[in-house]
Image (cartoon, rainbow, N blue to C red):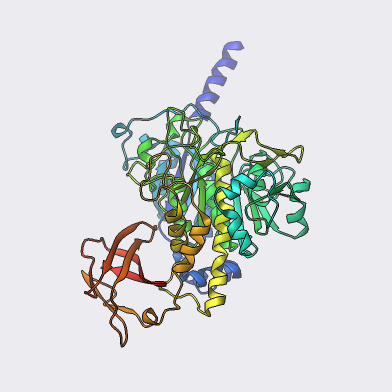
Length: 559
Protein backbone atom coordinates (compact mmCIF):
# COMPACT_ATOMS: atom_id res chain seq x y z
CA UNK A 1 0.00 0.00 0.00
CA UNK A 2 2.87 2.37 0.86
CA UNK A 3 4.48 1.66 -2.52
CA UNK A 4 1.20 2.40 -4.27
CA UNK A 5 0.82 5.70 -2.42
CA UNK A 6 4.41 6.60 -3.27
CA UNK A 7 3.77 5.75 -6.92
CA UNK A 8 0.64 7.91 -6.97
CA UNK A 9 2.52 10.76 -5.28
CA UNK A 10 5.25 10.62 -7.93
CA UNK A 11 2.66 10.68 -10.71
CA UNK A 12 0.84 13.62 -9.17
CA UNK A 13 4.10 15.46 -8.49
CA UNK A 14 5.29 15.21 -12.08
CA UNK A 15 1.82 16.07 -13.35
CA UNK A 16 1.89 19.29 -11.32
CA UNK A 17 5.52 20.07 -12.10
CA UNK A 18 4.81 19.72 -15.81
CA UNK A 19 2.55 22.78 -15.69
CA UNK A 20 4.03 25.68 -17.63
CA UNK A 21 3.09 29.33 -17.95
CA UNK A 22 2.62 30.82 -21.41
CA UNK A 23 1.14 33.81 -23.17
CA UNK A 24 -1.20 33.17 -26.07
CA UNK A 25 -1.06 36.11 -28.49
CA UNK A 26 -4.19 36.62 -30.57
CA UNK A 27 -4.30 37.60 -34.24
CA UNK A 28 -6.91 40.35 -34.15
CA UNK A 29 -9.81 42.10 -32.47
CA UNK A 30 -12.85 41.48 -34.72
CA UNK A 31 -15.06 44.04 -32.95
CA UNK A 32 -12.48 46.84 -32.92
CA UNK A 33 -14.50 49.26 -35.06
CA UNK A 34 -17.55 48.91 -32.82
CA UNK A 35 -15.51 49.74 -29.72
CA UNK A 36 -13.65 52.61 -31.37
CA UNK A 37 -16.96 54.12 -32.44
CA UNK A 38 -18.15 53.85 -28.82
CA UNK A 39 -15.08 54.86 -26.78
CA UNK A 40 -16.91 55.02 -23.45
CA UNK A 41 -17.26 51.24 -23.65
CA UNK A 42 -13.45 51.09 -23.30
CA UNK A 43 -12.37 54.16 -21.35
CA UNK A 44 -13.85 56.56 -18.81
CA UNK A 45 -14.57 60.16 -19.76
CA UNK A 46 -11.59 61.29 -17.72
CA UNK A 47 -9.34 58.90 -19.64
CA UNK A 48 -10.70 60.25 -22.92
CA UNK A 49 -10.13 63.81 -21.75
CA UNK A 50 -6.53 62.97 -20.85
CA UNK A 51 -5.98 61.46 -24.30
CA UNK A 52 -7.42 64.58 -25.91
CA UNK A 53 -5.17 66.85 -23.85
CA UNK A 54 -2.10 64.83 -24.80
CA UNK A 55 -3.23 64.46 -28.43
CA UNK A 56 -3.18 60.65 -28.27
CA UNK A 57 -5.74 59.06 -30.54
CA UNK A 58 -7.58 55.84 -29.79
CA UNK A 59 -6.55 52.73 -31.70
CA UNK A 60 -6.97 48.97 -31.64
CA UNK A 61 -4.59 48.67 -28.68
CA UNK A 62 -7.33 50.21 -26.51
CA UNK A 63 -9.89 47.62 -27.60
CA UNK A 64 -10.53 44.75 -25.15
CA UNK A 65 -9.50 41.17 -25.89
CA UNK A 66 -12.20 39.60 -28.03
CA UNK A 67 -14.72 37.99 -25.70
CA UNK A 68 -15.43 35.06 -28.03
CA UNK A 69 -11.74 34.19 -28.31
CA UNK A 70 -11.26 34.55 -24.57
CA UNK A 71 -14.23 32.37 -23.68
CA UNK A 72 -13.09 29.59 -26.00
CA UNK A 73 -9.74 29.51 -24.22
CA UNK A 74 -11.42 29.83 -20.83
CA UNK A 75 -13.56 26.78 -21.59
CA UNK A 76 -10.61 24.70 -22.76
CA UNK A 77 -10.29 21.93 -20.16
CA UNK A 78 -6.63 21.19 -20.88
CA UNK A 79 -5.40 24.62 -19.74
CA UNK A 80 -6.13 27.22 -17.08
CA UNK A 81 -6.60 30.89 -18.00
CA UNK A 82 -4.98 33.18 -15.42
CA UNK A 83 -4.96 36.70 -16.90
CA UNK A 84 -5.37 38.71 -20.08
CA UNK A 85 -4.06 41.91 -21.63
CA UNK A 86 -5.80 44.07 -24.21
CA UNK A 87 -2.65 46.11 -24.79
CA UNK A 88 -0.68 43.05 -25.87
CA UNK A 89 -3.78 41.18 -27.11
CA UNK A 90 -2.67 38.20 -25.08
CA UNK A 91 -4.03 35.65 -22.61
CA UNK A 92 -1.88 34.22 -19.82
CA UNK A 93 -2.47 30.49 -19.48
CA UNK A 94 -1.06 27.52 -17.60
CA UNK A 95 -0.94 23.91 -18.69
CA UNK A 96 1.23 21.09 -19.95
CA UNK A 97 3.57 21.97 -22.81
CA UNK A 98 1.95 19.57 -25.28
CA UNK A 99 -1.54 20.85 -24.51
CA UNK A 100 -0.44 24.46 -24.90
CA UNK A 101 1.27 23.80 -28.22
CA UNK A 102 -1.82 21.99 -29.47
CA UNK A 103 -3.78 25.24 -29.15
CA UNK A 104 -2.05 26.60 -32.25
CA UNK A 105 -3.56 23.95 -34.45
CA UNK A 106 -6.90 23.99 -32.63
CA UNK A 107 -7.73 27.70 -32.83
CA UNK A 108 -7.07 29.78 -35.94
CA UNK A 109 -7.34 33.06 -34.00
CA UNK A 110 -4.02 32.39 -32.19
CA UNK A 111 -1.08 34.30 -33.64
CA UNK A 112 1.70 32.83 -31.50
CA UNK A 113 2.52 31.28 -28.13
CA UNK A 114 5.33 32.44 -25.87
CA UNK A 115 6.41 30.29 -22.93
CA UNK A 116 7.77 31.84 -19.74
CA UNK A 117 10.45 29.13 -19.97
CA UNK A 118 12.32 30.56 -22.95
CA UNK A 119 13.93 27.21 -23.78
CA UNK A 120 10.49 25.98 -24.84
CA UNK A 121 10.08 28.69 -27.47
CA UNK A 122 10.94 27.87 -31.04
CA UNK A 123 12.05 31.40 -31.79
CA UNK A 124 13.45 34.36 -29.92
CA UNK A 125 16.48 34.78 -27.71
CA UNK A 126 18.57 31.78 -26.83
CA UNK A 127 19.62 31.55 -23.23
CA UNK A 128 22.95 30.15 -24.40
CA UNK A 129 23.91 33.59 -25.68
CA UNK A 130 23.77 35.26 -22.31
CA UNK A 131 24.98 34.25 -18.90
CA UNK A 132 22.21 33.83 -16.35
CA UNK A 133 23.02 35.92 -13.31
CA UNK A 134 21.55 34.34 -10.20
CA UNK A 135 20.20 36.78 -7.67
CA UNK A 136 20.26 36.03 -3.97
CA UNK A 137 17.19 38.16 -3.29
CA UNK A 138 13.74 36.62 -3.22
CA UNK A 139 11.12 39.29 -2.73
CA UNK A 140 11.65 42.28 -4.95
CA UNK A 141 10.06 44.71 -2.50
CA UNK A 142 11.84 43.61 0.66
CA UNK A 143 12.37 46.38 3.20
CA UNK A 144 15.96 46.66 4.36
CA UNK A 145 15.93 47.38 8.14
CA UNK A 146 18.51 49.63 9.00
CA UNK A 147 4.13 75.79 3.78
CA UNK A 148 3.65 72.37 5.46
CA UNK A 149 5.49 71.50 8.55
CA UNK A 150 6.99 68.39 7.04
CA UNK A 151 8.26 67.08 10.35
CA UNK A 152 10.08 63.78 9.88
CA UNK A 153 9.56 63.97 6.09
CA UNK A 154 11.44 67.28 5.86
CA UNK A 155 14.72 65.93 4.49
CA UNK A 156 13.30 63.59 1.85
CA UNK A 157 11.15 66.40 0.41
CA UNK A 158 13.58 69.30 0.66
CA UNK A 159 16.44 67.23 -0.79
CA UNK A 160 14.46 67.35 -4.04
CA UNK A 161 13.24 70.95 -3.56
CA UNK A 162 9.74 69.51 -3.41
CA UNK A 163 8.65 72.25 -1.01
CA UNK A 164 9.00 74.72 -3.91
CA UNK A 165 6.23 72.95 -5.81
CA UNK A 166 3.99 72.98 -2.74
CA UNK A 167 4.66 76.70 -2.29
CA UNK A 168 3.39 77.22 -5.86
CA UNK A 169 0.14 75.54 -4.88
CA UNK A 170 1.10 72.29 -6.61
CA UNK A 171 0.12 69.59 -4.14
CA UNK A 172 -1.39 67.07 -6.56
CA UNK A 173 -5.01 68.15 -6.20
CA UNK A 174 -5.82 67.68 -9.91
CA UNK A 175 -3.91 64.41 -10.25
CA UNK A 176 -4.89 60.76 -9.91
CA UNK A 177 -2.14 58.35 -8.87
CA UNK A 178 -2.39 54.57 -9.06
CA UNK A 179 -0.27 52.55 -6.65
CA UNK A 180 0.40 49.04 -7.97
CA UNK A 181 1.78 47.04 -5.06
CA UNK A 182 1.47 44.11 -2.68
CA UNK A 183 -1.25 45.23 -0.26
CA UNK A 184 -2.69 48.13 1.71
CA UNK A 185 -3.75 46.86 5.17
CA UNK A 186 -5.07 49.48 7.60
CA UNK A 187 -5.16 52.33 5.08
CA UNK A 188 -8.89 52.36 5.84
CA UNK A 189 -8.31 52.82 9.58
CA UNK A 190 -4.94 54.51 10.26
CA UNK A 191 -5.04 58.11 11.47
CA UNK A 192 -2.26 59.01 9.03
CA UNK A 193 -4.68 58.40 6.14
CA UNK A 194 -7.69 60.05 7.80
CA UNK A 195 -7.16 63.19 5.75
CA UNK A 196 -7.35 61.44 2.37
CA UNK A 197 -10.32 59.36 3.55
CA UNK A 198 -12.23 62.42 4.75
CA UNK A 199 -11.54 64.22 1.48
CA UNK A 200 -12.61 61.20 -0.61
CA UNK A 201 -9.15 60.97 -2.17
CA UNK A 202 -9.23 57.16 -2.31
CA UNK A 203 -11.26 56.58 -5.44
CA UNK A 204 -11.19 52.79 -5.30
CA UNK A 205 -8.99 49.86 -6.15
CA UNK A 206 -8.87 46.16 -6.86
CA UNK A 207 -7.12 43.04 -5.59
CA UNK A 208 -5.90 41.32 -8.76
CA UNK A 209 -3.99 38.75 -6.69
CA UNK A 210 -7.19 37.34 -5.19
CA UNK A 211 -9.63 38.56 -7.85
CA UNK A 212 -11.79 40.51 -5.41
CA UNK A 213 -12.47 44.08 -4.30
CA UNK A 214 -10.75 43.83 -0.91
CA UNK A 215 -7.60 45.88 -1.37
CA UNK A 216 -7.10 46.75 2.31
CA UNK A 217 -5.33 43.44 2.81
CA UNK A 218 -2.21 41.38 2.09
CA UNK A 219 1.34 42.77 2.49
CA UNK A 220 1.95 46.02 4.38
CA UNK A 221 4.44 47.09 1.72
CA UNK A 222 1.85 49.08 -0.22
CA UNK A 223 0.69 50.87 2.93
CA UNK A 224 4.22 52.10 3.58
CA UNK A 225 4.61 53.12 -0.06
CA UNK A 226 1.34 55.06 -0.03
CA UNK A 227 2.34 56.86 3.15
CA UNK A 228 5.32 58.42 1.32
CA UNK A 229 2.88 60.18 -1.01
CA UNK A 230 -0.36 60.59 0.91
CA UNK A 231 0.38 60.22 4.63
CA UNK A 232 -0.43 63.21 6.85
CA UNK A 233 0.08 63.83 10.55
CA UNK A 234 -0.21 67.50 11.37
CA UNK A 235 3.16 69.12 12.14
CA UNK A 236 4.81 65.68 12.07
CA UNK A 237 4.59 64.17 8.60
CA UNK A 238 3.46 65.14 5.08
CA UNK A 239 3.59 63.02 1.92
CA UNK A 240 4.86 64.47 -1.34
CA UNK A 241 1.42 64.79 -3.01
CA UNK A 242 -0.99 65.18 -0.08
CA UNK A 243 -3.93 66.36 -2.20
CA UNK A 244 -3.77 63.78 -5.00
CA UNK A 245 -6.45 61.15 -5.49
CA UNK A 246 -5.62 57.44 -5.51
CA UNK A 247 -6.48 54.03 -6.89
CA UNK A 248 -4.93 51.13 -4.97
CA UNK A 249 -4.18 47.93 -6.91
CA UNK A 250 -2.74 44.67 -5.57
CA UNK A 251 -0.87 42.59 -8.16
CA UNK A 252 1.93 41.16 -6.05
CA UNK A 253 1.50 37.76 -4.38
CA UNK A 254 4.03 38.13 -1.58
CA UNK A 255 4.18 34.49 -0.53
CA UNK A 256 5.36 33.31 -3.95
CA UNK A 257 7.41 34.63 -6.84
CA UNK A 258 5.78 33.77 -10.17
CA UNK A 259 5.67 35.19 -13.67
CA UNK A 260 1.89 35.59 -13.32
CA UNK A 261 2.60 38.79 -11.40
CA UNK A 262 3.86 40.41 -14.59
CA UNK A 263 0.50 39.77 -16.28
CA UNK A 264 -1.43 41.00 -13.24
CA UNK A 265 0.61 44.22 -13.29
CA UNK A 266 -0.27 44.80 -16.95
CA UNK A 267 -3.95 44.23 -16.13
CA UNK A 268 -3.73 46.81 -13.34
CA UNK A 269 -1.98 49.34 -15.56
CA UNK A 270 -4.70 48.86 -18.17
CA UNK A 271 -7.34 49.43 -15.50
CA UNK A 272 -5.53 52.57 -14.36
CA UNK A 273 -5.43 53.90 -17.91
CA UNK A 274 -9.13 53.24 -18.43
CA UNK A 275 -9.95 55.18 -15.25
CA UNK A 276 -8.01 58.25 -16.35
CA UNK A 277 -5.06 57.88 -13.97
CA UNK A 278 -2.22 60.35 -14.55
CA UNK A 279 0.73 58.71 -12.75
CA UNK A 280 1.48 55.14 -11.67
CA UNK A 281 3.94 54.19 -8.95
CA UNK A 282 5.34 50.67 -8.94
CA UNK A 283 7.70 49.72 -6.12
CA UNK A 284 8.14 46.22 -7.54
CA UNK A 285 10.60 44.65 -9.94
CA UNK A 286 11.02 41.28 -11.59
CA UNK A 287 14.21 39.31 -12.18
CA UNK A 288 14.08 35.85 -10.58
CA UNK A 289 11.23 33.44 -9.90
CA UNK A 290 10.54 30.38 -7.78
CA UNK A 291 10.75 28.40 -11.01
CA UNK A 292 14.30 29.21 -12.17
CA UNK A 293 13.38 28.36 -15.76
CA UNK A 294 11.15 31.43 -15.75
CA UNK A 295 13.81 33.79 -14.38
CA UNK A 296 15.19 36.60 -16.51
CA UNK A 297 18.76 37.18 -17.56
CA UNK A 298 20.51 40.53 -17.69
CA UNK A 299 20.18 40.32 -21.48
CA UNK A 300 16.40 40.41 -20.98
CA UNK A 301 16.71 43.83 -19.33
CA UNK A 302 16.51 45.61 -22.69
CA UNK A 303 13.08 47.15 -22.24
CA UNK A 304 11.41 45.02 -24.89
CA UNK A 305 11.74 41.39 -23.83
CA UNK A 306 9.76 40.88 -20.62
CA UNK A 307 5.98 40.87 -20.77
CA UNK A 308 5.71 43.55 -18.09
CA UNK A 309 8.14 45.95 -19.77
CA UNK A 310 6.35 45.60 -23.09
CA UNK A 311 3.14 46.47 -21.27
CA UNK A 312 4.79 49.43 -19.55
CA UNK A 313 5.89 50.92 -22.86
CA UNK A 314 2.35 50.67 -24.20
CA UNK A 315 1.09 52.32 -21.03
CA UNK A 316 3.33 55.33 -21.62
CA UNK A 317 2.12 55.51 -25.22
CA UNK A 318 -1.41 55.84 -23.80
CA UNK A 319 -0.35 58.97 -21.87
CA UNK A 320 0.52 57.51 -18.46
CA UNK A 321 3.54 58.65 -16.47
CA UNK A 322 5.10 55.48 -15.03
CA UNK A 323 7.51 55.68 -12.09
CA UNK A 324 9.28 52.52 -10.95
CA UNK A 325 11.73 51.55 -8.22
CA UNK A 326 15.16 50.61 -9.57
CA UNK A 327 15.47 47.66 -7.17
CA UNK A 328 17.58 46.74 -4.16
CA UNK A 329 20.14 44.49 -5.84
CA UNK A 330 23.18 46.76 -5.78
CA UNK A 331 24.94 44.50 -3.26
CA UNK A 332 23.83 41.21 -4.80
CA UNK A 333 25.18 38.98 -7.56
CA UNK A 334 22.39 40.24 -9.83
CA UNK A 335 23.32 43.90 -9.25
CA UNK A 336 21.14 45.37 -12.00
CA UNK A 337 17.69 46.91 -12.27
CA UNK A 338 14.70 44.63 -12.92
CA UNK A 339 11.63 44.81 -15.11
CA UNK A 340 9.72 47.04 -15.80
CA UNK A 341 12.37 49.51 -14.61
CA UNK A 342 14.29 48.66 -17.80
CA UNK A 343 11.55 50.01 -20.09
CA UNK A 344 12.77 53.08 -22.02
CA UNK A 345 9.83 55.33 -21.17
CA UNK A 346 9.58 54.41 -17.47
CA UNK A 347 11.04 56.87 -14.95
CA UNK A 348 13.33 54.63 -12.89
CA UNK A 349 14.30 55.80 -9.40
CA UNK A 350 17.32 54.73 -7.38
CA UNK A 351 18.13 55.53 -3.76
CA UNK A 352 20.41 57.76 -1.70
CA UNK A 353 20.73 58.30 2.03
CA UNK A 354 19.85 61.44 3.99
CA UNK A 355 23.26 62.92 3.12
CA UNK A 356 22.62 62.46 -0.61
CA UNK A 357 25.15 59.63 -0.88
CA UNK A 358 24.26 56.64 -3.04
CA UNK A 359 22.71 53.76 -1.11
CA UNK A 360 24.82 50.64 -1.61
CA UNK A 361 21.73 48.49 -2.16
CA UNK A 362 20.39 50.67 -5.00
CA UNK A 363 20.44 48.69 -8.25
CA UNK A 364 22.77 49.51 -11.10
CA UNK A 365 22.23 50.32 -14.75
CA UNK A 366 22.70 50.49 -17.59
CA UNK A 367 20.12 48.38 -19.38
CA UNK A 368 21.52 45.49 -21.39
CA UNK A 369 21.21 47.61 -24.54
CA UNK A 370 23.23 50.42 -22.98
CA UNK A 371 20.60 52.97 -21.88
CA UNK A 372 20.96 55.05 -18.73
CA UNK A 373 19.06 53.57 -15.79
CA UNK A 374 18.11 54.60 -13.19
CA UNK A 375 17.48 58.13 -14.39
CA UNK A 376 17.04 59.83 -11.01
CA UNK A 377 17.49 59.33 -7.26
CA UNK A 378 15.58 60.12 -4.08
CA UNK A 379 15.96 59.21 -0.42
CA UNK A 380 15.44 55.49 -0.08
CA UNK A 381 17.77 54.75 2.82
CA UNK A 382 15.92 55.26 6.11
CA UNK A 383 13.24 57.66 4.87
CA UNK A 384 10.32 58.57 7.11
CA UNK A 385 7.27 56.31 6.65
CA UNK A 386 4.04 55.60 8.50
CA UNK A 387 4.06 52.24 10.28
CA UNK A 388 1.08 50.18 9.15
CA UNK A 389 0.40 48.81 12.66
CA UNK A 390 1.21 51.57 15.11
CA UNK A 391 0.35 54.65 13.00
CA UNK A 392 3.69 56.05 14.14
CA UNK A 393 6.51 57.49 12.03
CA UNK A 394 9.39 55.10 11.50
CA UNK A 395 12.77 55.44 9.81
CA UNK A 396 14.01 51.86 10.10
CA UNK A 397 13.13 50.66 6.60
CA UNK A 398 15.07 51.25 3.42
CA UNK A 399 14.71 50.51 -0.26
CA UNK A 400 14.12 52.04 -3.66
CA UNK A 401 10.54 51.02 -2.89
CA UNK A 402 10.34 54.31 -0.99
CA UNK A 403 12.48 56.65 -3.08
CA UNK A 404 10.14 55.80 -5.97
CA UNK A 405 6.86 56.96 -4.34
CA UNK A 406 8.55 60.02 -2.85
CA UNK A 407 9.49 60.92 -6.42
CA UNK A 408 6.10 59.89 -7.80
CA UNK A 409 4.31 62.40 -5.61
CA UNK A 410 6.47 65.29 -6.79
CA UNK A 411 6.19 64.24 -10.42
CA UNK A 412 2.41 64.26 -10.01
CA UNK A 413 2.60 67.74 -8.48
CA UNK A 414 4.71 68.97 -11.38
CA UNK A 415 2.37 67.28 -13.85
CA UNK A 416 -0.46 69.28 -12.29
CA UNK A 417 1.37 72.42 -13.38
CA UNK A 418 0.15 71.98 -16.96
CA UNK A 419 -3.24 73.27 -15.85
CA UNK A 420 -1.58 76.43 -14.56
CA UNK A 421 0.30 76.79 -17.84
CA UNK A 422 -2.82 76.53 -19.95
CA UNK A 423 -4.86 78.79 -17.70
CA UNK A 424 -2.24 81.53 -17.55
CA UNK A 425 -1.40 81.45 -21.24
CA UNK A 426 -4.91 80.94 -22.60
CA UNK A 427 -3.36 78.24 -24.76
CA UNK A 428 -4.76 74.78 -25.40
CA UNK A 429 -2.65 71.75 -26.14
CA UNK A 430 -1.96 70.81 -29.73
CA UNK A 431 -0.09 68.12 -31.61
CA UNK A 432 3.07 70.23 -31.32
CA UNK A 433 3.12 69.70 -27.54
CA UNK A 434 3.94 66.64 -25.50
CA UNK A 435 3.53 67.41 -21.82
CA UNK A 436 4.90 64.08 -20.58
CA UNK A 437 8.04 64.22 -22.70
CA UNK A 438 8.73 67.78 -21.62
CA UNK A 439 8.12 66.94 -17.97
CA UNK A 440 10.56 64.04 -17.93
CA UNK A 441 13.19 66.07 -19.75
CA UNK A 442 12.76 68.97 -17.33
CA UNK A 443 13.23 66.64 -14.34
CA UNK A 444 16.24 64.84 -15.81
CA UNK A 445 17.97 68.08 -16.82
CA UNK A 446 17.54 69.42 -13.28
CA UNK A 447 19.48 66.52 -11.75
CA UNK A 448 22.97 67.09 -10.35
CA UNK A 449 24.80 64.70 -12.67
CA UNK A 450 22.81 65.26 -15.84
CA UNK A 451 25.96 65.99 -17.84
CA UNK A 452 27.92 63.13 -16.32
CA UNK A 453 25.58 60.20 -15.59
CA UNK A 454 26.86 57.12 -13.76
CA UNK A 455 25.76 53.48 -13.81
CA UNK A 456 24.28 53.46 -10.32
CA UNK A 457 23.60 57.18 -10.02
CA UNK A 458 21.98 57.86 -13.38
CA UNK A 459 21.40 61.58 -13.88
CA UNK A 460 21.33 61.97 -10.11
CA UNK A 461 19.20 63.90 -7.64
CA UNK A 462 16.69 66.22 -9.32
CA UNK A 463 15.86 69.73 -8.21
CA UNK A 464 12.13 70.33 -8.66
CA UNK A 465 12.47 74.11 -8.47
CA UNK A 466 14.73 73.97 -11.52
CA UNK A 467 12.49 71.35 -13.12
CA UNK A 468 9.44 73.59 -12.57
CA UNK A 469 11.12 76.49 -14.36
CA UNK A 470 12.44 74.25 -17.14
CA UNK A 471 9.01 72.73 -17.64
CA UNK A 472 7.35 76.14 -17.81
CA UNK A 473 9.93 77.31 -20.34
CA UNK A 474 8.74 74.67 -22.80
CA UNK A 475 5.41 76.50 -22.96
CA UNK A 476 6.55 80.12 -22.79
CA UNK A 477 5.25 81.84 -25.93
CA UNK A 478 5.43 85.37 -24.58
CA UNK A 479 8.11 86.73 -26.93
CA UNK A 480 6.98 88.43 -30.10
CA UNK A 481 9.88 87.11 -32.17
CA UNK A 482 9.00 83.44 -31.63
CA UNK A 483 5.24 83.79 -31.71
CA UNK A 484 5.08 83.53 -35.52
CA UNK A 485 7.93 81.03 -35.84
CA UNK A 486 7.29 78.01 -38.06
CA UNK A 487 9.39 75.24 -39.56
CA UNK A 488 9.14 73.61 -42.98
CA UNK A 489 9.04 71.10 -44.47
CA UNK A 490 7.61 68.86 -41.77
CA UNK A 491 7.81 65.82 -42.18
CA UNK A 492 11.51 66.25 -42.90
CA UNK A 493 13.90 64.25 -45.03
CA UNK A 494 17.32 65.79 -44.27
CA UNK A 495 16.90 69.51 -43.54
CA UNK A 496 14.28 71.93 -42.31
CA UNK A 497 14.06 75.72 -42.38
CA UNK A 498 13.16 77.94 -39.45
CA UNK A 499 11.06 80.89 -40.54
CA UNK A 500 9.80 83.90 -38.60
CA UNK A 501 7.22 86.19 -40.14
CA UNK A 502 8.57 89.70 -40.91
CA UNK A 503 11.70 89.16 -38.88
CA UNK A 504 15.22 87.80 -39.04
CA UNK A 505 16.03 85.58 -36.09
CA UNK A 506 19.65 85.79 -34.97
CA UNK A 507 21.54 84.04 -32.15
CA UNK A 508 18.98 81.46 -31.10
CA UNK A 509 19.52 78.06 -29.48
CA UNK A 510 18.16 74.85 -30.97
CA UNK A 511 17.64 71.68 -28.95
CA UNK A 512 16.14 68.46 -30.30
CA UNK A 513 14.90 65.68 -28.03
CA UNK A 514 13.76 62.14 -28.72
CA UNK A 515 10.26 61.24 -27.53
CA UNK A 516 11.98 59.52 -24.59
CA UNK A 517 13.47 62.85 -23.53
CA UNK A 518 17.06 62.24 -24.71
CA UNK A 519 18.76 65.29 -26.14
CA UNK A 520 20.09 64.42 -29.62
CA UNK A 521 21.14 67.87 -30.83
CA UNK A 522 22.01 71.24 -29.34
CA UNK A 523 23.47 74.13 -31.28
CA UNK A 524 23.45 77.91 -31.54
CA UNK A 525 22.37 79.27 -34.89
CA UNK A 526 23.75 82.71 -35.66
CA UNK A 527 23.22 83.08 -39.36
CA UNK A 528 21.65 80.10 -41.07
CA UNK A 529 17.98 79.30 -40.62
CA UNK A 530 18.55 75.80 -42.04
CA UNK A 531 19.04 72.82 -39.75
CA UNK A 532 20.43 69.49 -40.96
CA UNK A 533 19.09 66.38 -39.22
CA UNK A 534 20.10 63.79 -41.80
CA UNK A 535 22.00 61.93 -39.07
CA UNK A 536 18.83 61.22 -37.08
CA UNK A 537 16.85 58.02 -37.46
CA UNK A 538 13.28 58.19 -38.71
CA UNK A 539 10.76 59.01 -36.01
CA UNK A 540 9.16 61.77 -33.94
CA UNK A 541 11.27 64.39 -32.15
CA UNK A 542 10.65 67.52 -30.09
CA UNK A 543 12.32 70.76 -31.25
CA UNK A 544 12.88 73.47 -28.64
CA UNK A 545 13.97 76.91 -29.83
CA UNK A 546 15.14 79.50 -27.30
CA UNK A 547 16.10 83.15 -27.60
CA UNK A 548 16.73 85.26 -24.52
CA UNK A 549 13.74 84.50 -22.27
CA UNK A 550 11.58 83.25 -25.13
CA UNK A 551 10.97 79.57 -25.87
CA UNK A 552 8.94 77.61 -28.37
CA UNK A 553 8.53 73.85 -28.81
CA UNK A 554 7.40 72.03 -31.94
CA UNK A 555 7.06 68.42 -33.03
CA UNK A 556 9.38 67.17 -35.79
CA UNK A 557 8.66 64.17 -37.96
CA UNK A 558 11.82 62.73 -39.52
CA UNK A 559 11.24 60.51 -42.55
